[in-house]
Structures are given as structure tokens and as C-alpha cells.
Image (tube, rainbow, N blue to C red; front, side, top):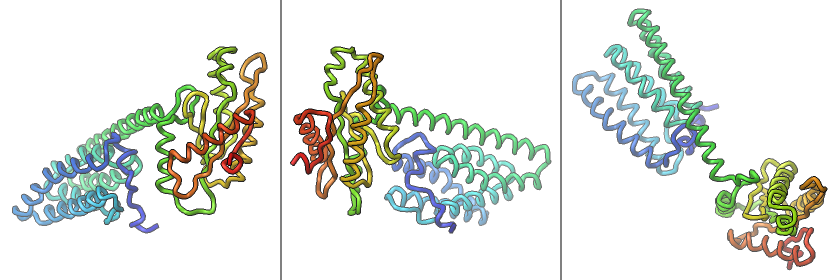
Length: 340
């Protein structure tokens, strides 16, 4: 692997941060970094600390360049490991010339990295930064002093990892709550709008297409009225559970609302989608939803995403096919070709 291949993805700010908007966060962080570091580098240069001033300017230059291109939604110009190496060099030189007071900068930098980049990259970066400085301190200061420094650095690293893991766990829970239907565990309408619109905006000519299956539980109102809403909830839950257990990892189930669901099949031909829909329809009819042995059936509308089709047209086509399936007696699968 080449060193240039190790640059971080554009989404690096999400996994290891507070999920702030990337550009806003990076601008503020860059401003603070330059406000504190740039005058210091100039001060060192004017006081003939050429190595200190030049090393800090080298780091600021590489970091500023990458942040500028990241804000412009472009790949890093300078490989990310090189930026961390310049930072490590700056801190090493600072400790070498100034003494232990220079090592104090490692503490805020360690914490800052955990809130700027993903956890794995932050650990690597902190390793690159801390190890050379720790070795230098062992040579320049008493062993007991160096041990205390290493212990405090280790505690800072552990604290940073704990904070980030806690934040990431909370973030994942919030994301799941905002995108998932709490009753069935299927993704909600909001997440469906985002995913399908994204597919339409990024679609490319390919051998296979994207297909949606629109499911509707037949006579669901009667299930609620005659068997109770609790049985209706069980029917919804078992439907989603069954579909999830019989689809590919790339397929996604959404709850549109009520008893209607959308199953997204990625890179699938119409023939394969119809086969999947028919197989699901038959197996769903065997699902028992209460102790009395009541079964349910579904009607399915199938729509293939075609060229120049909008999001609303895609859903309307699937809905029209579903309506035709209901008109013809329910418990059947209808595609665009069959509906027309």
C-alpha cells in the first residue's frame, strides 16, 4: 500500500466527533489552531529558533492545505500520515529545545485528535506523536519523571477513547431512533426518502436496475377491528421479521406508514424482482399472527427505476401496481408491465 493511499475519507469528521457539520467545525478548528500556533511560530523565528519555527510552519502548511481541500469536497492533497508526521516532528523538536514544557502540548492534541478524526486513525496518530516524545523524555529527564509522564499520557489516551466511544454509541442510538420505525424495526419513511432520492441522484447506466416492491397487508383494517390492534401490531412485526429473514444484505425494508411497506432491491432485474416478490407473497401467506391460527396475505406492486424517472414517479408507479393487485382480488404480485 502506498503512503498516499492512507488519506482519510471525506466523512472522517463523523465517526470520531460530535457529528457537527464538517465544514463549520473544520473552519472553526482551523481558525483556533492558526490563532494560537501561527504567532508562536513567528515568535520562534524572530528569536532565532529556526528549527522550531520552521517545523511548526511545516505542520500548519500541510494541515491548512488538507482542510482547505476537504472543505471544498475534494480529496486530501497531502497524505494524512505525512500531516501527522509533521505534527510529531514539531512536538519532538519543541521538547528537545524547550524542555518538558513543550511536552505539555501533547495533552490537548491527544484529546483534540479523538474529536476530529475516527478512533482508529486517532490511535495511530497519537502513537506516532507520543512514542518519540516519551523516548526523548527518558533520555533528557529522570526516569521517575519520565514514567509519570508516560502514565499521565496513557491515562489521557484512555480517557479520550472512553469519551469517543460513549459519544459514538449515543450517536448511533440517536441515528437509529431517527431512521427506524419503533414498532417493526424497519426503516421509516424519512430514511426511505433519503435513500431512494440518493439512488435516483446517483444512478448510472448499468446492466441491472433498482426495483421497489410495495407491500400492503390485505384487509388489515379487518384484522385490527376483529382481532384487536395488538394482533395487528403482531402482524406488522412478523411481516417485517419474515421479509428481513428472506432478503439479501443489500436489500432494505421501509415502513411507509400503516400497513404499507417498501422493499428496495438493489441491482436486480425485473424478472428476479418478480421472483422474489412472488416467493415472499407465498411464504407470507403461511405466517400465523395469533393463537387461533389466523394467517395474513399481502398484495405487492413492483416498479423498476427507469431512466429520467423522478422519485414521486417511482413511488406512484409502484402504488399503481399495488392498486391493480388489490383490484384484481388481492394476494397477488403486479408489475408495471402487467398493470399496463
